[in-house]
Image 1 (cartoon, rainbow, N blue to C red):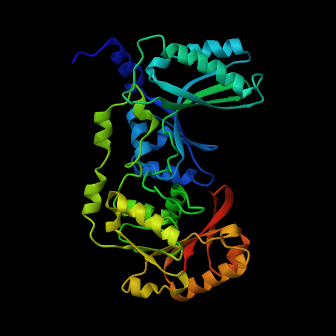
Image 2 (image 1 turned 90 degrees about the vertical axis):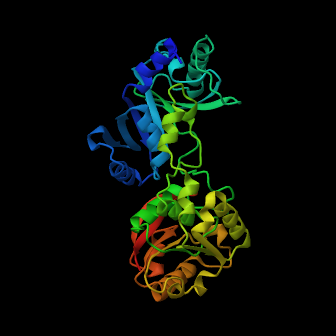
Image 3 (image 1 turned 135 degrees about the vertical axis):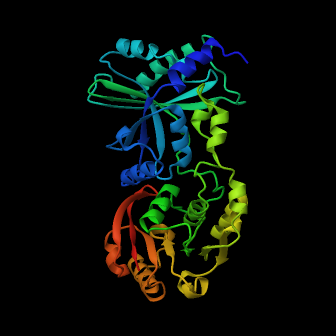
Length: 393
């Protein structure tokens, strides 16, 4: 089929060139994300750790691959333009100078995330309205790519202004990256998948390790560990915003993805043991692992953490134990948080000695009450700044 002049422009200016991208990371996870990128073979001289994340240069295909492969970040933004503007007239001129039909489909619905600091243009809604009008006018003027999706495509545009310097970016990700697309049912206050990955990584979890997840809730630790064991790309079960861009190649994308069902079909031995005392949590967990063949690798049972004997589960080798204990309202008014964590610490020290472990702590002080020699790493969990306690038990 003959290539149209429009397709040639997209190839020449979008897919055929390197662009600047920015990875948004949760607090405390920037270095982990950098480590992930280097392990994937990304050249270190093309990335830079900055406040809030990592900046890197690459082609669009690499951005697609990183969305599929990275476990720790939140989003990947594609930088579109940078300019200085002290008036709405200058802002509109600079936005109109971008050839938006090369970046976005005609049938998209725009959302804006605007923040300003120390700039003459400070009204975020007014900035968004003016930019939206210009971009939609360009997209509706004819010649733009139309996404095959049957409904309007949501696309978020990020605009940041500081000291009158504007940066405009496209969200290549869509829903936050920690949303893997596996967990259809969730229990109260689940651990985010990127935090679960970070804790497993910090604890040195490897493919051949046993994992005990004794307060599993809806199963984030277990599901993340299963994907790590199977070397399954974290983005295998979800969609991304870039799939609707004019520069998107389905052929390239399908080449990057690995068929998940074939991977899990080759795993016959269950080495991840999830348990809880909450029937609703177990029902959610059971439903989650039925998808995609993950039930082949995870054992789910109703057990009280304090009754578990790890030497029965894994008599010949020690592994990793991960806990997200209930605290605050989830723990209930009758239970003292300090006493609860003290009992957890005693149980771990008594029965899990020699295991590597991780535990969510709502405050630094609870490390003392647990009695465990843990390294505390600040993480953001459930809208709160909490700590991941990691160490040898």
